[in-house]
Length: 219
Image (cartoon, rainbow, N blue to C red; front, side, top):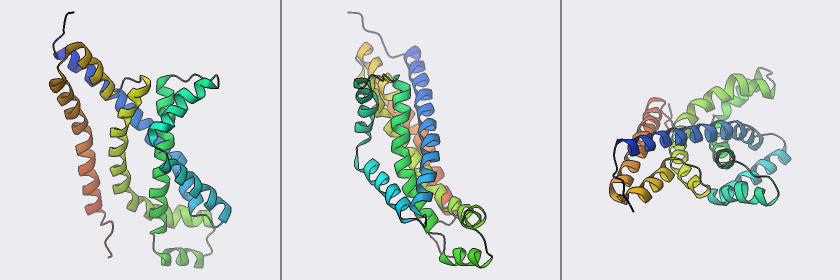
């Protein structure tokens, strides 16, 4: 058996896999953000039945490991005759996972807008939709930015579990290269460095936004 060495071509393969990691992260945050937005609105609705449905959804998603969601999307649906490509299954699973957490994060941000803002907008005879559009959501968006960016770091790292179904993201690419080179220290050190290059700036951005926007302070 001829062993390969970890060189430029292998590192290039890791970089291409990193691109797929970022693509999967964007899919998860984009799709999860859309669903999570409506979940957050339902959680803060004046209709009790909407709050119950949204609350139940969040509890179910947060109570199930994302790995189980991935298994159900890929293996479970295949048993029902629906075989999803790894990218589709991974994107759907990460989207569902992200929606449960973003919905709860944004629910907290909406409810953290001072009660006086709700009362002031009501005194101007605004409808509920107008309250959200012109008063509540702009303030909630400002509050949510640090925690949303911080959650994006978790999504980037959690994409590594999609290697279980054969999706070649960064962690899976590291496994494949290690199987060919048998140089785990060099290979996975490079994998860890690439994760760090992506996650560390996001973590710093989250902290900067928290300071810049004075989230959590009372002015």
